[in-house]
Length: 136
Image (cartoon, rainbow, N blue to C red; front, side, top):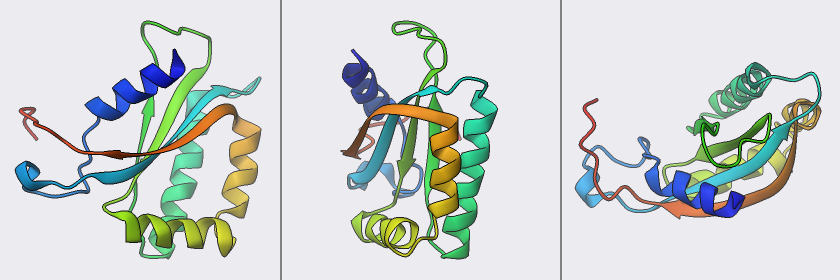
């Protein structure tokens, strides 16, 4: 069920970082973490981790985008959420992963992340916007 929810979220999510002309947008990479909040943690703690990710990315001049998906129907397990991170293209994702994981810039973030949530799956997808009539 969670995999279907994640796929539906990905298909409905807009990658604003991919292009201004959405009709010619190419698929961009995204990563999802399917998680449950740890005891005593709230979605505000997830937001704090997201801000830490943004700080690491900004320091490396490495643009990323993040979204939090919380269910309002379907799998209503208390504290369940999906965190999605997106990049404009694969070279950007690779640079971000190298800085964050290999070079250690994200070490403190990952310690805080582990204290905040327990995740049962982590997946990488490509996502493309087929159409978007929502005004900006």
